[in-house]
Image (cartoon, rainbow, N blue to C red; front, side, top):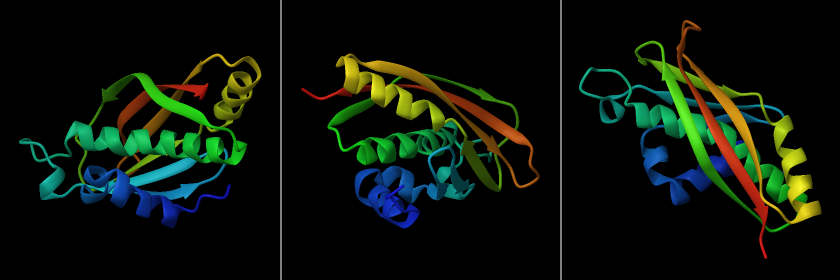
Amino acid sequence: MAVSTGKFNTFTFFKLPSAWWCGVRLRHMDEKKAIVTVRHKWFNQNPFKSMFWAVQGMAAELSTGAMVIAQIKESGKKISMLVANNNANFSKKATGKITFTCEDGHLIKEAIDKTVATGEGQAFWMKSVGVNEDGVVVSTFNFEWTVRVKK
């Protein structure tokens, strides 16, 4: 995959500044898996002294969307992408360093290939699981991504 984590983190500084300032960082990405971390700090907390749910959402979305962006770039086609739907479950207060992992990269290529072949939009769900430093799941996010060849 041609997109490096360093270049992607620079991209977030310029194109997703709220995520960058909150500490959301891409740590690993390949065709199948992406890992994003964010650390609980005073500027990304809620009134209950844990990480604000939207900060967790930014990190979780980046763990899915970074792979979509990279695979679209790799395809060489002009393809639009959009989150059509999402849901989340919060199972523990998010404090300390939270690591979001998505292992659904295998779903992207099939959707890209279908939209290129048919010209019709394609939708697929990707899951990102956030765990704290003890390995305890704090939140699980699901994102329905849509891809479509640009006309």
